[in-house]
Length: 249
Image (cartoon, rainbow, N blue to C red; front, top):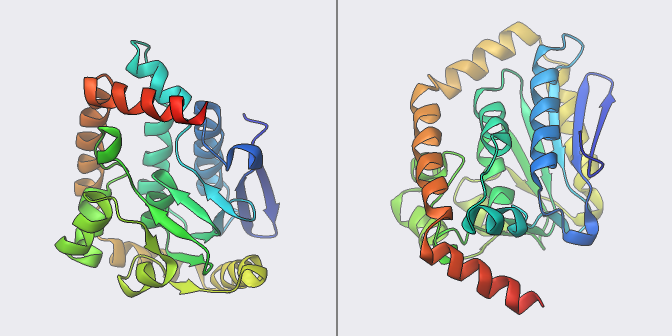
């Protein structure tokens, strides 16, 4: 587990909160492992009907901890924690709701593509600078974003790396609703409670019908992951990470 992931059960709702505010919730391998475990256990727990993912005020997540990326770029080996988390998102059997405030970079954007409802605040910025880092889209985003938003909006987000405001993301169909910062968690939990009150078997079938088969999504995540791992060791990625770390210093 990770000290930077807080997992709580709120009645029939399992809450997974990223809690590393000093690093804007940059996600470490230990955090990925903790979140994957929490999502999988929630799906297996009959007392849980809905899963919720949250960050902290002003930061959903700044994305993957770049120190982990740099370690791989410099010749280290990455584990399976990120892939396990992506599989938990993509194959989860129960509804998933997210509340996003502020920074939502990389995985901070693509997590929400797997959510049934995403609430965001006006100060939220969805940003996927994968190509700028010498990388490629992940979490099935290269499949999901074009399907939802169309090819050109997808290219703007995933290719150009343009930040999307919450309003633009909502207009593109990528999130459900924009709410004030001080109402975010109230709205998230109200929605989660409403979902939890539905007949669970009917809801499961309805959700499965809407999602359709997930084989194509799983295959795309595997394909993206293979490219991503290879790109992490590329000269382009190594140079981008080193430049970023130098700017931070």
